[in-house]
Image (cartoon, rainbow, N blue to C red; front, side):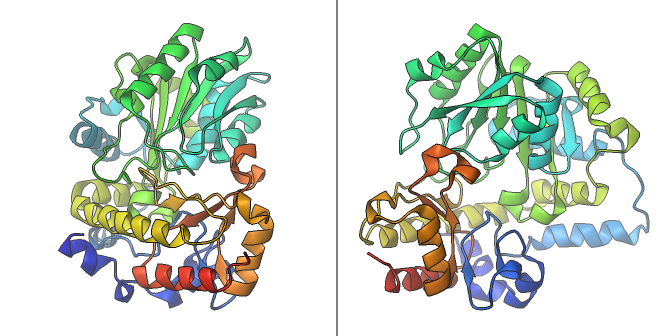
Length: 393
């Protein structure tokens, strides 16, 4: 772990008092005092100083005026440059649209590219936002069951495609399994999309959190994918900007951008990303690469530590993820349901985790729990101590 990460990600860098006032979504502000939340994928650490400074400097100008519908020109350019530097992809800024979070973008894209009665093929398990977006568009989902470690049976995958199928949802890296799909796997997905003339909705919100020796492989890096890929990225996981609600969409060309903006209502100011949040994202991309490298190194250490500890518990098996800062241990052999075990840990161990319920991740999540690692070693160690002392098996 780098010296930088040791400084930035130790217990003295977080403020529990502020977290209990501001960290919602099943976290510190919503739980009983003394309960440790390993729940929502939102870091406990404050945002990098460069982002804080950029926001203060922008506010000194005294104006928070409307921005252009597709986002600030400097935001779109910064996003394009980030693709070039990190992924080696030349992506023009005029294909990028700022959105108020990748979650909102998921719904907006589903509404723009799916009709009532259409079907989207999604992984099982996978984050609930894929099915949520399809439902908001009046479409349905068909789920493809991944193996415990995230492998794909391609014959089975293709067998689920039918005349109603219009889109394939790809979570890269995958939440909650932490799988970082390979270029050959993404290429196979593209081949199926081309064969059946399907859109690819690529959620790459976790693209910065990939552990050594791997690297993120964007769907847009696959030759021929750009013309049918609708890509989502954001800053909530990488830089702790969940509350800023800022991300972006990359679309096939400027025609698609214009159509999306019209359909979304952005040109009428009924949809669009806050300019202040775009300023935060620009600062993150331009000035916080060292902070991010330290954060990923810290998370990789957290992953190794937690996997070793969890593997000791009776009835638990846990795969070491390639990416993301969540673990998804299989607890099916304990004899407890995900919901019952999660409630037991919350009440007896005072540790909150996310049950692997069908509601959040699909049927393939049953028999699992999800834990976030984006906290200090001290807090994670205390949480695991409590879990071990109150393990019911």
